[in-house]
Image (cartoon, rainbow, N blue to C red; front, side, top):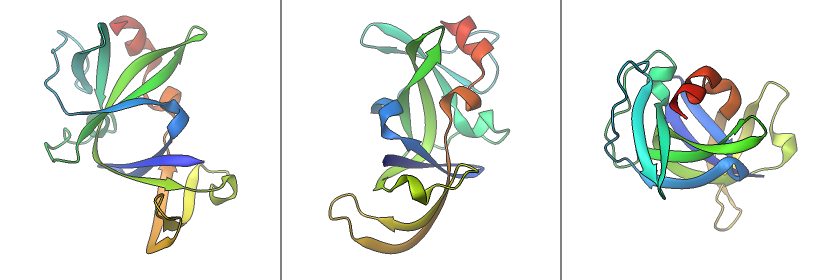
Length: 147
């Protein structure tokens, strides 16, 4: 299993690569009037309007900071039998790891020694991250309204 690691105010997350469409730089979003504060806005992705959710704000924290490693992760969101693109604004979008299913506990927590994707060798850093569940973390009713 290949996982993208990123940070939020609530800790470290891991997202399975098959959910990812593309990772793009943080760009200015078009604000949506009356949208909840965790909706950063909309972006144009290949001619399709895509809502972007600010992960730290979604968790009740401060907005994502404009670090070089802050990115928009475009993911597939399951809605009405199809996958639609949504964006997740997150910090520390820099690491990719490979792990086995056995490295993930039933609580959705990834435990184990981080390995480099390039050579498969342990880096010496312990890694604890929660698996990011796109459908559970991003409110369906808001996705429907912004669609």
